[in-house]
Length: 230
Image (cartoon, rainbow, N blue to C red; front, side):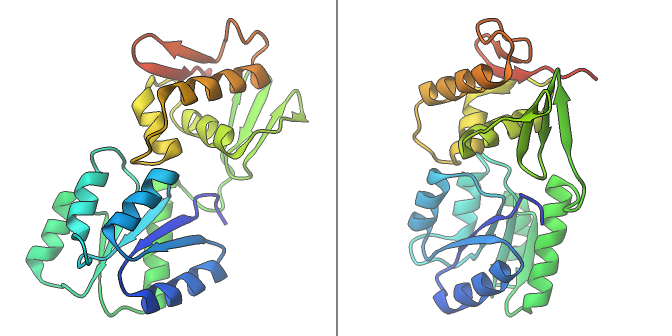
């Protein structure tokens, strides 16, 4: 199983969400559900997610509105799952930024297949070992491990997620707001100073000279870049 397995369900049908959660957890996914747009936004602000399963008809909004707001700050894959099967609804779902549209009722086997395909398309093969090396540091994105000179380097969950995002976008200046959104959650209210502190901690653990970093560098007025030799 890939480490890309954190799924958020936003659907007011609690019985269906329970069945989906039970099925997906049996395949090793971590699943959390929300029954309203407001609850969904709260969960989206608390952490990052790898895939959203989103109903259209919600008690306090619509899935279209949730996706529209989400797309302002995140490219996390979204599957619309709805009893609204008209062509206009499907077109609207894709136009707003949805990645797939699954009409209700659907089988659990089809849902699982769609989820696997979308995660594979978005993040790469589930079985492929993805490693990034810079200097004497090796980051295994699949196993979620870091080694320096062959010795394990313990990182917190957030530190690893931050490093992993930089590793997935090597030699690219990433804006601070993008890092906050992708690592802390799409609607997180975390202060930029929190990001600065986590970058400092990573440098202290991985750089030979944290005061003059060779790999995790600051890009003035933009954010940060992980410089990796091609």
